[in-house]
Amino acid sequence: MDSAKEIWERALGELQLQVSRANYTTWLEKSCGISFQKGIFVVGAPNAFVAEWLIKRLHSLIRKTLTQITGTNVDVQFIVHDKEQLQSSSLASASQTDGGTSTKARIDRFNPRYTFSNFIVGDCNRLAYAATVETVENPGHTYNPLFIYSSTGQGKTHLLHAIGHRAVDNGLCVTYTSAEQFTNEFIKAIKQKQVEDFRGKFKNTHLFLFDDMQFIINKKQTLQCFFQIFSELYNNNRQIIITADHHPKDMAPLSDKFKSHLEWGLIASIQPPDLKTRLAILSTKAQEMALAVSDEVLQLLAKRTWGNIRQLEGALIYLTARAKLIRAELTPQIVNMLLTSTTAKKGANLILQTVADYFNLSTEELRGDTRNRKIALARQIAMYLMKEEDNCSFTEIGKLLGNRSHATIIYGHRKIATQITTNPKLHRQILEISEKINPH
Image (tube, rainbow, N blue to C red; front, side):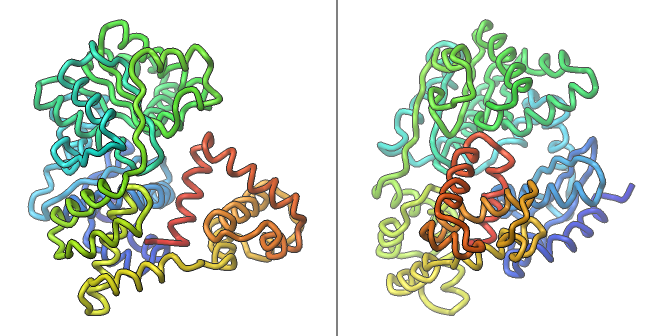
């Protein structure tokens, strides 16, 4: 088998063709392949900021590329590496092979930038923050389970990693897993007939942190295994903390029994940050990244950017980079100009072409009458994105897609809008396409 270094060099060659030149130079060029063991490929990044960006923005694409190159199902991890000392790769492997229960592995798994000390508290998240602090100081007794929900990018994962750091500091055994990782390991255990061993990995943990539960609610066997582990941990007074994008009562595929289990403890929501919180977040991020940004610019950006926390950070990074590129000081006038250029209509034709490229189709096929599953799905995703990303009318979308009827476009849009909340694969596909349409 080729070495991790050789595999990664081949992957970079493929990735260079799939991302913009600027993204490749900024985020991928200085990365390297560190190790490839037991289906886990460890990628080294030059600093924590790059590693986090790769996790958030390119994880799915990198995983897909490595899977194609190696011919096996690959899980990808990103770590900060030193070119002269790459011994940290052994820690990255340990975080998967021991079920995520050793203290040594936990230190490696939790993002160093996600701590309680740098979590910005506001009215939008005060209850969730206070509850997580209480659970890690008094696990299994105060709020158990603790269920935190919000839309994407509002800080749920930040809180889970902060709990992990504090729990390790307190000498506790903590397990963190995402729904995707849990599913992959469970499927592997079924194939190897080691389901009992898989469940046994969690029995000695003091805190069980489960991220993005919405991705397993329509997977019957995985969900059943999850609730068996849930019940065993709960009966032994082990602390359980779960995040998702909806309140349990709004997760239609869940049975009433499962919903009631999730409601035994405390349910806390995180709302989009208000203006005061957005300004505090931007100020903190600017200090962390050593960016020279005036208070006037930060205030303008806080007022103009209404998205989630990730979008706030992304807007700050983008504006700073663009100002450097055009060799201009980041003034309120420059901010207004750049934000206007990035929020202008992207164009339905661009969306149509991007969707076609993503599915290896032509725009003619999307406009045509062929109704096989692949083309029909791509066509409906195009309908959805034209409406959501470009605010086209249903009539306009129908004309662009081969003069289809108003009712057909409404049906296609509604179908994707309904399935996106329960179909993890579809959700990831739309996120990836959206990022290609608007990389900033």
